[in-house]
Image (cartoon, rainbow, N blue to C red; front, side, top):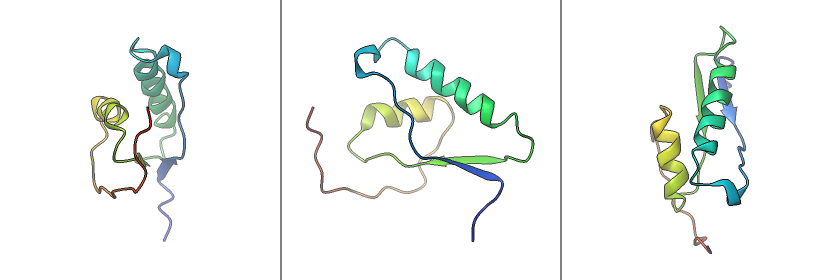
Length: 78
């Protein structure tokens, strides 16, 4: 059953050359604020790869909580 009051964020990308400058955090926070301007929205969800620790930290800083972790077979190739 689909939750019509939830917005799932499928993808949010920032130029990797701009990471570490708080730009991603500010942009993501504004995006979240925009989502919740719609009064019918009461939650938002997203998925992130288990190895992407930095982006998980960003999501937690803006209020997301880890509900479930699914390990992937892929490795971080950076």
